[in-house]
Amino acid sequence: MEAFDTSIEFTERSQASVSWLTLERVGYIVAGLLAAVLRFAGLGLRPLNEAEAVQALAALRFVDGSFQAAPSGTIPGLFTGNVLAFTLAGSGDAVARWLPALAGVFLVLLPYGLRHRLGRGGALVASFLLAVSPSAVFFSRSLDSVILVAACGLAVVVGLFNFVDFRRPGGLYLAAAALGLGLTFGPGIYTILLLLLAFVLLLYLQDLLRKPGPGWSSLQAAWGALRDEKGLGAKAGGVLAAAFGLAAMTFALHPAGVGHAADLVGGWARSFLTEPGGQPPIYPLLLLLRYEVLVVALGLVEIGRWVASKRSERQELAEGSLSLPHTAFLTFWALVAFLVILISGHRPAGNILLVVVPLALLAGQGMERAWRWIRCAHVGREAALVALAAFGLGIYLYLQIVAYVQSSGGATVSVAGITLLASSTYFVLAGVGLLLLIVLGGAAWIWRGPRLLLSAGWLAVLLLLGLWGLKSMWGPSFAHTSDARELMILRTTSPEVRLFADQLGALSLEEAGDATTLPITVEATTGPVVAWYLRDFLQQSVVEELYAQPGTVAAVSLAAQDLPIGETFRGQGFTLREEWLPWGLGAKDAIRWLLLTETSLPTVDQEVVLWVIGEQ
Image (cartoon, rainbow, N blue to C red; front, side, top):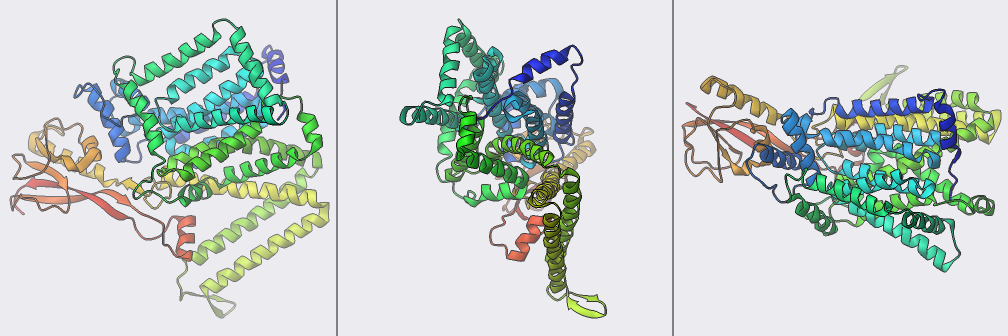
């Protein structure tokens, strides 16, 4: 059980007459702006993948009147968002991803509602961690429901904690609205509901079997307040129903969306079945270590601190009269979500967000505690100097490791006239750097004792992991957006699909005088990605297979097919989809891939061919 700062509300009321724009609120504005830039800048940089194209096409076909009901597999919340966007702004890659990007910004601002629990600084730090989180940024820039589920799940938690702590109806309404929307956004919301119910059950069993605890008592008091306030439960239920109905039924334009929302329950249950060709159980763990090592490390340290404090009788007495234990809940959330991901047969990369969000909140709380400890130790300046020196040595070590993995087996370097193998030289230089780090730690211990060593080590690790986190965020979201060698991607639509669409547009302009009016024949097996990028070509004839020569100037099919086109058509191939798997790499190749995303080129998984009538 943890304390929460009840003076926040009083302090803010007293400061309101002076200035609304406090330094804390400026911090949240900066975090929100940073999140918005990272999520909306170049939002259409990466072509839509197959799953994204399926969702985008469903909304586009509904808007243009091609069909009246979305196909099976449509996620109703995404469908509603894109129907609205395509109606107002037209279709496009960036437009299709607007809702996840907006949800990503909303997720960053939600810790503001838990600052009475995490601490003012802790909540603000959690916001910045979520703003630059590699997985949160990447999936905010994808037409994927996982970021929407994560935002709705955290909003439910924020709303419930505010209602339990302050009895604010607004908290209950927030939780109800978030739950209503979450039920339309993806099957992951049922994982969050599962862990919420399981945590409540644990509190009840603790109260029943051991001793009455403040956690269960606070829930009972909140339930009593809900029943005592006339109409509050009905209003919250109305908010939930309204949010669900509007999102699921596309503002009453698509009633069948309720059925699609109900299908999400079955989708969640089926995710526990073994998926042929799915990722191994180690995959989510590798994702966390490759991209979210900063959040994972800081979150685990805070969990360790909390576990250690629970063993202290003094700590138990200090917290004995307090409310619902938020650190215990966040720890339970992270552990249960990770276990659910491990035992699932379907392990998409985005599921790690359900683990990253609670760990980010714990990391923010832990960083505030650590900073207070450093200030109380009165070693701030000395710790900063030692940390900067350790940071420089850490960068030096990283560069030596990079040089080693990039060196070839027979490469040599000359040092003081002596010729040495490059690999051996880089090992020696890395050893020198490691030795200097040990000497630096010993000097810090002798200078000011273990407090300086711990403070400087914590700051140095924070700087190094923070820099690695920024690099990990930049790769899949900006530098390598279509590189299948990114562990978070592995299978992607090739940028050549846009070149394919441009070539067809140029042919249409040449043959028909307009970039989109050329009659074309498209084989249905080309899939949703090709259909999305040819969406503006209105004179398409879609056939199951090209059994005979098409009656159009151009035709589109997949490669590696024996088509009866004869010698009257010439074809040009374009890579449609690439994939790459890291399993089976050697030690040196694996390190080079993890550090630099450099290894063998991705495999061309699918190729599309543009056939044009004419002489070969």
